[in-house]
Amino acid sequence: MIRSILLASLLALGACVAQPPAPVPVDPSYRDQNALIGVTSRFDADKFSGLWYVRAGFDPTISRMAFRMIDTPKGHSMRLGVFVCDGGGVCGDYAEDLPATKNGKGRYSVKMPNGQTREFWVLWVDEGFRTAVLGNKQGDFGWIVDRSTTGGADRIKAAREILDFNGYNVSLLRTVK
Image (cartoon, rainbow, N blue to C red; front, side, top):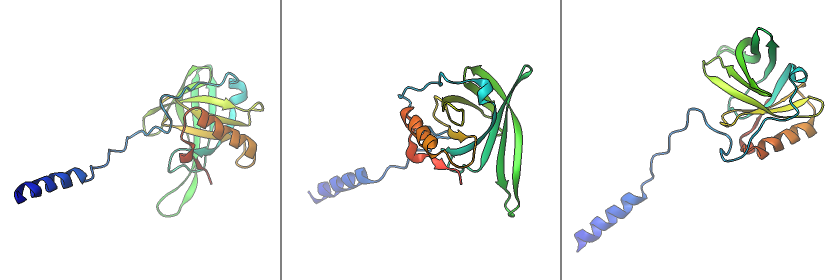
């Protein structure tokens, strides 16, 4: 009898042991895959050209970045600039031209420095082409970009709402300092 109670207790206790955590995905998704998502109908490549500053994004290590899409008859690229520091405290700006493919109106694939290809879509842009939202169906990426590094609080707020509407978990959005 005691042996049966002890065995039942051990089995019950074993059921309470915490399971190991699920592995973290290599490319996390920051959006609900069931939510609808689409490119803005307002996209205009000529108006979108020029310098954009990343004001917020989902990458936990997001830092000061800027980019410019370069569309020429010979091809497309994204010039990505970042502010980086080495381990010794030496900091500076670094830029690289990344090969890009235009996949349609407001849709690009960019070969990132790590060798992976990242799709991005222009989900929204304000009427004056001052603030835009970039993301993708996979949800592994999302940026709020602006023509300026400061200001435009109303547009930045609208951009957050667009990310939310497109299924992104905006509680994970990080502002660039």
